[in-house]
Image 1: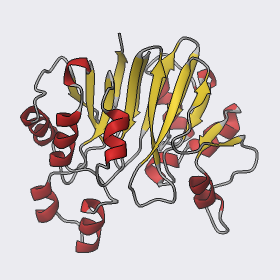
Image 2 (image 1 turned 180 degrees about the vertical axis):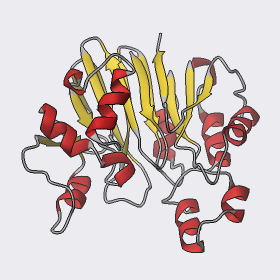
Image 3 (image 1 turned 45 degrees about the horizontal axis):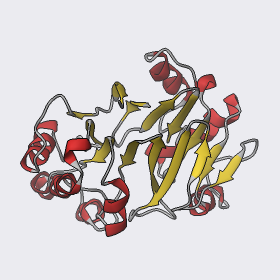
Length: 259
């Protein structure tokens, strides 16, 4: 199993998970043109995809999902709440011509060589989920866009071999930054985004000797820096540059193998 990112941040998110002949895209916050260009960097095309999985309906995660699925005839798996959010009257999203499959939080599904667990998370969306992927004994997790760590979330991700973990903001930078108070409260709330200290708390609860790759993701360009995020994780016990890296908005990160 291996994973890569096409980009991570408030301007667009997309993550690739591959195993054998199976290639899954988690979210797509980019236009078709941009997605094709970013996949081409990895020697891939959207035509190579098996399916698209959606975490929630916010634009930086779903902007390109339906157009991409429609053009390349790809099935889209999403929760009932997410489907409801994007298909209501007046929505900008067109679901016509797209094969939609409902996934249920906590209920596993099989996509080719990958076993997929949708994990419910606290976020300000209709029915948001994140994902744990399993292939044999290997486990890779995508965990971004949540405002707090529930016992269920910690348990679901504790034994990952690879993990994309949200480090959205530094508390001091958010407090002193340019956001209006209402947005600061939203971002920093229990259904907003994880800050560096929360991410560090999650790292403390991981089975650290097992973890091969930790990728700090969804960093705010206004309210965080890679140095701040890395420092928080180092304080939590992971300061090995061979295992810890930061995903960027422009380039994401290249393939990481899970051995």
